[in-house]
Length: 45
Image 1 (cartoon, helix red, strand yellow):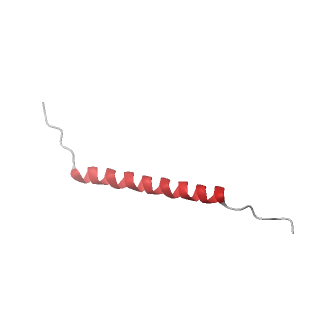
Image 2 (cartoon, rainbow, N blue to C red; image 1 turned 90 degrees about the vertical axis):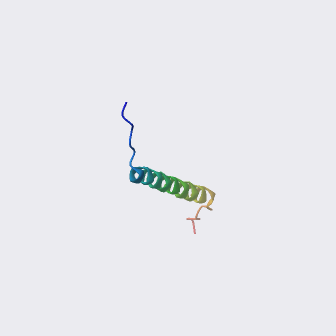
Image 3 (tube, one colour; image 1 turned 180 degrees about the vertical axis):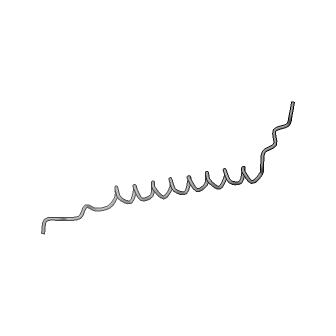
């Protein structure tokens, strides 16, 4: 059987891409929570 060779740069790229996705999801969740907790704007003046 041949040994499977994995490029370390590919592993680092996957880790970086995964962390980027996690940061984007965290920011999205934070914005959604802020919008849900925001006071509604009074439009009748």
